[in-house]
Length: 112
Length: 115
Image (cartoon, rainbow over all chains, first blue to last red; front, side):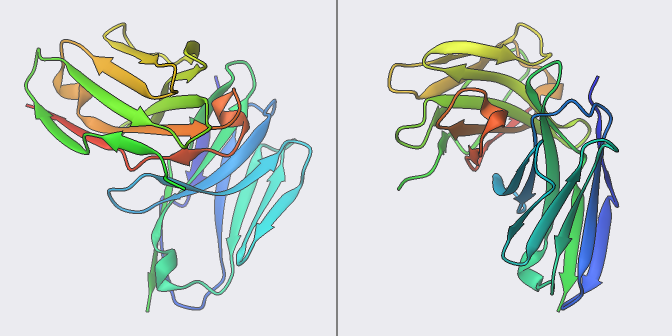
């Protein structure tokens, strides 16, 4: 059974700092991995999608990497801003169930 | 273009009642998937519909059901509500089948409270 874990569960950093969020999964037979952000009381916004054949994806200040063999992904946020404050979720798709399995999330607070 | 629209945004029901939630996908998207989000269990997959057919289903009891119409709008129904059904219900649409295989666009969700 696929399990997705995110560390840390919560993170508070001062504005301008570079930071890394971690995601680990137990079944490496995935089709892709996605990173989302969720603002309080709102739906999810897709940030990056990495196909299983890719090693990383970049969008602006965000960079996500994928190491399928070790079951790990990281989301790197450069020069963090207060507007980056949100819950960040990773999700993997594929394997035995062909369902999108979400991680536990990291609550990020960027202090001005 | 308009995003994914979910209605109602908030609702309160009592145990034993039933509820129907609606999701209108982005125009042209034929895949709609539903998720339940609770503080204890996180985000869990409910089901996915593509071209009016259920393609996949999560591990939820039969009280949870859904359907998709010819215009791709989808509804989910929960019968005999229990306190544990209180959650944020999210739907997502994509242009291709296999909801998680592609970039998903989520709606703002329907927050259900069961008293």
